[in-house]
Image (cartoon, rainbow, N blue to C red):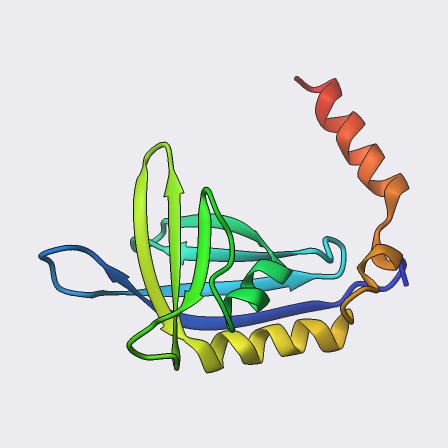
Length: 142
């Protein structure tokens, strides 16, 4: 399986929720690769050519579809007043953001990732030699 790479991409619309301000739609590119089978990347378009990338545990997003999940920097949960929408709360040293998005869109994306790499099979997709090589190559340039 390590020689085969499966990639999944989807575009979703998220809404940035800010106190005392109108909701701001944000286009988000969701991506998944079997090369990093435990993770999902979300690239938030913050301007014309600017993106902010966040990487989440795939299981965290899946758990957040049904109940509150995560602590610290990332929290995901169904909205109490509208369970067809998901809240995604991000915290970093540079700020805090609360987004909502369609539970169905996120669920469809995650279903496709689980079809590509079923739960509990992630370990068999890891290429430890390549990861070690990447780590050593990065360390050599620092």
